[in-house]
Length: 261
Image 1 (cartoon, rainbow, N blue to C red):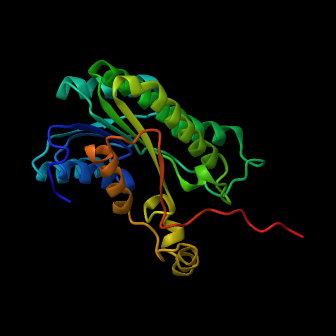
Image 2 (cartoon, rainbow, N blue to C red; image 1 turned 90 degrees about the vertical axis):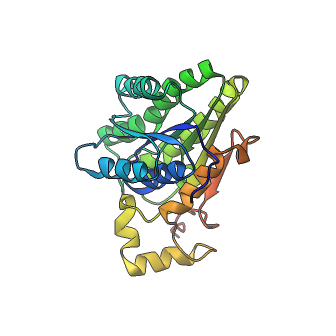
């Protein structure tokens, strides 16, 4: 998608070296935004490759190595953005981790801490650091990535589900607190998306077929499906939307497994 709806805007996208984050960074650049793309892994060439794609659109882009669970890292990311561009208009929090297959009862403390510290606390750190910049500007737009398993329980989701549910309340609370500063805060709740995050599911033809049977639209999501929803929220087309959690799941709703008799 190429248009000018974000012309003159500056956006930060975390977790942008692949998957949903990459797709969102590219679509925002295609709509005219200059970018700061950030990821905890910055030395495997993927983040630089995304930056190169963005620069081909004529937009500016800088890359930042950041562990979002580290408050100093996040604050330095915000400072770099302001030093380079003088402002931050859009923040998209895509960075996150999932440790699959663990029930809450069996989840080791270190895994719980890792998931919550990254997904929930890390998203909060980003909202806090960038939100302060936006409050000073009296304008801004924050988009958080939750999940369908943040809305409903999911088999094997464990601590991930709790972290994504927390992001929903974080979004709503920030929307309330930051509205007076002309800052909108919303969340997207994707279903299963065809990324490296869950490659074992969608690369298995039978598993993908079974999951797709539960999706009214009949297919799993592509990263670009989520990116288009993020572009809508980032634009003035969504200027009267804040505190919303928008499912992007093809109509699918996660349901718990049948009860044992």
